Image (cartoon, rainbow, N blue to C red; front, side, top):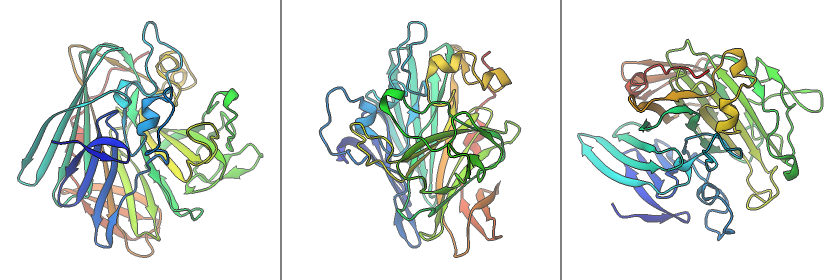
Length: 384
């Protein structure tokens, strides 16, 4: 398949009769992605405003590409090395050159297989993306093989929001508790944060702020001029966990599904113009990342391996990889049109090849969806 230049990056085109998506040659970032709904096509993912600009040589490749969703292995900034491993920000998987190995089109199924041979920790990462005719969904699966030892990893989906404050409504499946990250950026970067560092909470609409007040992190955009990150501890007893963002005026809902025994946390990054150093320059606004991870926040492998405030309480922030047994990480992202009056998602039920989304107002919509890839991931051995 020939590469195309899409928002400044050579990319492969993936398509079904409902979805058109692009995967970048560098970093394997998935985006833009267009979904065909009755009201027209929508493109919910964020693309960095500097995508077509020529950036300084020392800017990490991940920032040059930054868009949509990408797989991170190890997840996090990785400023500190772990033993002799000095990983790139979010790992080679989000920075290095990928290969397209195979594309297969059969009876309405469109399967694309990519691979990356890693060097910092020698091994193989295989990326499988499946699109299905009639489904407004992207089925993702990453397989890690040939590696051993503790590892953090996760997906980094970024949504762009309309400029109107509170235009998107975020909801999630049951979580045990939430925690604001202790430090978002290096103090030298002077990135302003609005949420109280280290604060814990049980409700999305009652999160402590630095002002001493409580704020609602379930409605966005909000808190212009700030950058914040919070982590939600998913309930591992659930057969599947989900996140969802409803856009009532645009008449659609975006949702994602994961195996919470494998991707144990949801990291929410609220990026609303708080970074004023290059290439951000205060212009990355109205973006919310819904990152499904096993990691200690966004810090990196070294911090995830070390004893920390989550692992100390029995919530492991790494998994142990084995050369003998590949680790398979599935993830599904999808959209569905909604009727007027459909507000925040209260429940998502998977039944009979469909996802049934019920809103807090009592309205329901159904979306064709095959959740079987979530069941292929075995429970992982927990790292100490």
